[in-house]
Image (cartoon, rainbow, N blue to C red):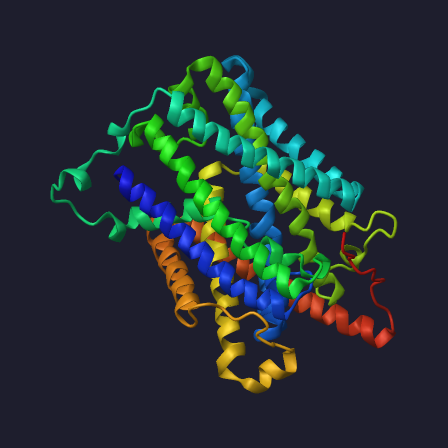
Length: 438
């Protein structure tokens, strides 16, 4: 894939994310409750699809991205130290390989989870601090790289610029699979929709947060990847989870590259923190409806945090760090989440046009209306279907694991539904404490 096609991939991925953000903004404004896709699908298609989305969120939507981000963070941090420290540890088991890097990745997950469990105020302060650091670092890194870095604009030269004939890369299966990796980088564009019950003036602020946040991220990613191509030839970036570290070394030399690598690792902690605080709201909503263990519906009156849900998610993420590779996690995440998000947007279309009676019963009010409707949701769904089909053909094993994950949720749904009916007849139920706004 030539440099300009790679940049086009990031732009297309950003447009898909923006299309989704516009749709989720309408859903979030109409249903401002904690739970995100679980709440939206419950209103549009019923409990079974909603539970399956929550099940996917538990295993894929948050735990797996947290694991993948922690692995990448550890890779960057270890650029600060001699290579000997990053060698695998002595413990090697059939299904896992324990090294210093995996231990650090697991430790970061646990520490950030503890911070968000400690209190809403501490978690909010940590998230704001990490986000400001990441934004400032990206802008400084890009500015310094373009002005003082030892890069070359010749890295952008290729068949497209020289007008030589070539196949259209965007129709290649590699482009679609690359979109899976790009889509992972945009993961979090819908985070505000999961926190609807804790956002002040949600009918205004949820759409604002989703749309402006996604636009800012698109601009930053295009800027950052332009810098990466300026620093490195595309062949040097292929298959490298620490491409930022390589770019920093190429631009500023080994020592400066090490410093920048550590800063990139700290920047990834912001994404980790955002996912760690968002995911438990889904498990909370499921448990509140009796479709998950009641202990995950409990919120500490003193801390105002869903502690059990936070620790469940942290445990699953740690297990994935120890047992899965970075690339397999990304394909697994991208394929499975594309299915759920596409169904969510189709649910919005159903609420809008297929049945006014359903929209009236659910309270779907279209307070915020998706710009460009119906083109915007159709673009989002079509893009995700494209990713799904090429994932199946190009990475069938990872795609199969995604389908298996979804299928495994069905017996759990039937069991929780039966258990809820039994508890209802006996007059028992989970003790609930609502999540409050910070």
